[in-house]
Image (cartoon, rainbow, N blue to C red):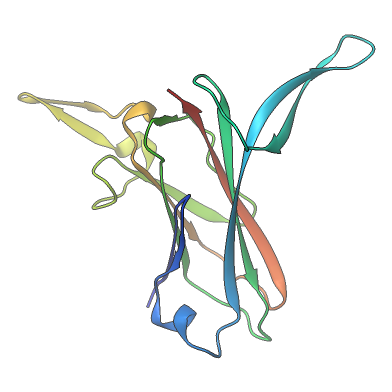
Length: 161
C-alpha cells in the first residue's frame, strides 16, 4: 500500500493509515521561502532564500517539504502531494527531490497525475502538451526507502501572479 502525504500552505494533512497510527513516527513540515537577489562587494549577484513573510506579484516562492522518519525502521512507498497555491504559477523544472523519486504533475486539481513530458491537454479535437502554468499539483513518489532516523526534502517553486 502506498503511503500518501498531502501538504498545503495552510495545513498539513497526513493521509495514510500507517502515518496516522500512534506508533508512526513519520512527520512532515512545510516551509515557504522567497527568492531574493543579493549583490556582494565584488558585484556578484546571488539568489538567497528568506522566510516568505510578505510576497508581491512577480516574487518567486520556494516551498520546501521535509519528511522525517524518527522511527527505528525504514519506510517504503512514500508519496507526497502538494497543491500549487492559488494565484501562483509553477516554475518549470523547479520540482526537486533529495532522494530517488518520480515527480508527477496534475492539471485537474490532483485527480490524475503524469510526468511533465506526458501530461496532455485537450483543446477542441486536438491535444497538446500541458504548460507548467497549467499545473495544479505536484506529486513526489520516493522510489527508495526513507531510512530510520533520517530526513529528506522535496521542493518546488511558484511565481506569484
